[in-house]
Length: 223
Image (cartoon, rainbow, N blue to C red; front, side):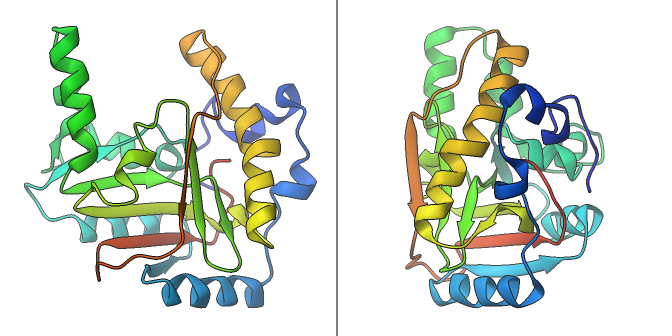
């Protein structure tokens, strides 16, 4: 388990009224191994990490100093300590999110946000993973999923093994029945507005070798 926050799943599931027993279980070692094999067959590199601390160190190793980095709102990234590191004096990356927030002109800020999906390195959590290897995400606006299919130079995904579902259909249901209701509660608390199942992406195959890497953590992270 990573660093718990007020927006971690354990603090929101009761209000969201979701079935954590169905959608947030740890798969068996064999199921994880088969999932990894199927993901790799789809052209996506997988790096296993035993815990959130190792996941963060792995992520640091993947992104060179001075690189242009964009990340999205992700409880998983917060729980492994990525946001804290990115905002520290230790980080040597160019944080595009900080550049966007610092822009006072609304039109320019929107343009920067739109272009940020083409970052050299885009770091993202995921909503669900099918044992058959497809990786799924869903956004209200598309600010995250826009980077997934092609735009980002390098896409680094981080997920706990708790997000693995049996089939692609189950993975889609996991988003609707578990991840979205919790995210909706988080959005209301954090922003005072509801979330939506606005834009979906299913990463089924990657043609560019080395472009997409999944750091798969042997813990329950995010939702």
